[in-house]
Image (cartoon, rainbow, N blue to C red):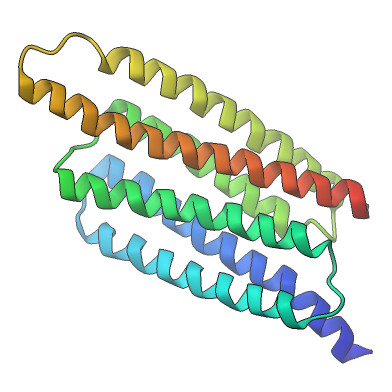
Length: 205
């Protein structure tokens, strides 16, 4: 019986590990946006690789375990959403480096909001079994932060597309727009993860 329960608990353990790596990466993203420390680029890339490995193990566990603590599709899609947040975090930093785009006030604020959303996702998953009602409160907070991020994204686009003076200015607009889009997409994935957590809570608690 203990072995059976251990096999079931491995999924929650892996989800917590995966969202922890994502939280760490998004924290580094905020730090990078504020301080432009290129040493952070490699750190985020490492977090992304570590998160990928955790997800590979989780998928393998799903494929060879008969009974899971939650619906196996919910486990898979929640893990995928968390992985997407981490991927967008890494892609944002990678493209800033490749395209030589510096941070600005919108990127700083968007990274701050994303960090808060991911922190609340981390909290929700950590207590999803032990304190499901409190986990629901964290879900609501995640969705609130995603709404704030989406509004800021639209404001950033409005300011970005003020008529540029040069061709170089147009190119910079297009580059920066992609960075805004990555962070907006990461916010969307936070909202998706929040919805999956909410579904798990409704189905099981």
